[in-house]
Image (cartoon, rainbow, N blue to C red):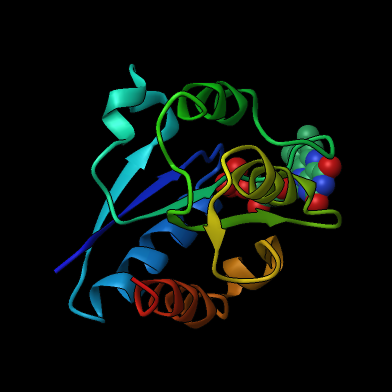
Length: 146
Ligand SMILES: Cc1cc2nc3c(=O)[nH]c(=O)nc-3n(C[C@H](O)[C@H](O)[C@H](O)COP(=O)(O)O)c2cc1C
């Protein structure tokens, strides 16, 4: 059994909901998912020792959240080279927060990004409950690559 670390930020709960459903998808493969909020990380050592990493945050003002950016500076000190990675987020019109995370994981950390794009789900889809299955599928797809 391998473990994926899922780190998220969320102001009003939608991206947290995504993180929880993604974790369900990971666990459906028989692997483990550890769910943590961005603000829980104090040292880059807290990120080491996992087989996969999924980071996510919402988009506010066309940007990732400040807490996520701070977390990514911390993560840049950990050895994530060639590790399995994925990025996600919720949004209404331009999901640039998840894209910023994805690009950092790929180009700065040199991670092995499983999907070719960040996984973005619109606020309205999440609120209707119709996004849950897609989130589970995303977690499952990443875990199957471990
Ligand atoms: C003040 C404000 C600014 C926002 N800016 C953007 C934006 O630039 N692009 C976008 O796609 N969504 C934007 N949104 C929508 C949020 O990304 C969306 O509500 C998201 O689901 C919130 O996620 P959370 O519940 O995890 O905080 C904004 C929302 C608010 C309240």
